Amino acid sequence: MTEVRTAIVVGGGIAGPVAALALRRAGIAATVYEAYPSTADGIGGTLALAPNGVAALRTVGADEAVTAIATPITRMAMAVGGKHMEMPGLADVPPLQLVHRSDLYRVLHDRAVAAGVTIEYGKRLLDTQESATGITARFADGSAASADILVGADGIRSTVRRLIDPEAPGPQFTGLLGFEAVARHDVDAGTGTMTFAFGKGGYYLYWPEPGGGTRWGVNLPQERPISLAEARAVPSTDWMRTLRAAYADDDPGRALMSTSSADELQVVGSLQIMPRVRHWHRGRMVLVGDSAHAPSNSSGQGASLAIESAVQLARCLRDITDVPAAYAAFERLRRGRVQRVAARAARINQAKAPGAVARVLMPLLMPLLMKTAMNPEKTIGPEQRYVIDWDAPVTADPALR
Image (cartoon, rainbow, N blue to C red):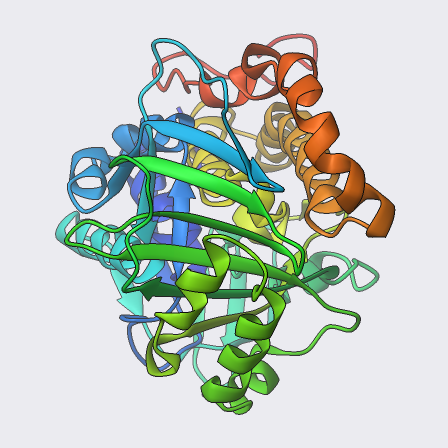
């Protein structure tokens, strides 16, 4: 039985509420402290929840509420140079679930509050002070909070990561800029079909939107990163003009861009990842989610891995009384898995921004690629079939799990 009774969770996005729920199930009272002054309703685009992510949500009783608001993807295809090919999938695995980030946030927020988790807003973390018995967090508004441990679920620009290791890396630019919208154009694809398209101007994906039209997302190659604020400062009409020019020679890219409204364009900004973070924990502080591991959106696993890590951390703290040993067990359970996912996503990113020669060769190589490299059991099977056994005890022995 754990000796940890209370926890400060910094960050109220996706990983934070899940961590608080899982900790509560492990017998640890957690309070979430969010830097923003209010809830994040309406913020963010669409994200994917893989089967393993939904399975992890089941641990905290949030899976059914999330799948109820999601769009299931049951079939995937690839389009290059006018050629369309169905991508092989995994047998006997639930579908990928697409959900708006703001809707996922609201479900997790409401679930946490209903379970008795307190969420405080306007609490931007400045620093921490540890003692032999606990840790105190000090916030920019002059307030402070104390608990047995502190969990950093504060995202890719984590303050907790810097407090753990002042030399820790920051986010890394992928060379891609993200956009999303819904076109009035209906593509020739069945319900639940997602198509990954490699156009002359860049990579994009699309799927039929429930209720009509086609939702699309674009990863446009970009030379230098810009902040989200900078990207959104550019008039949406200018961005739409850029996108229409980039996909003017693509089908259905041209139709998707031309029938989308600039007023409804979601500017995601420069897509970033976390390079390898050396130290996930120090003393009574530990990182979960994007603060420790943020793979490219190409992985389709970012949110799912964050949810998994929140659940695994709670298991470790439940079963291992020594806090540093619990954190070490948590890292042992997670680091290898998240780094393998990140490596796979990095390879996909290279294909999203191909050079001139690669663009010419891709239509010719695609059939061979489908038959050889795209073995779903080998590439994504270990990722999507992963299920956390909540009831299994965690041991501090490095040779065991």
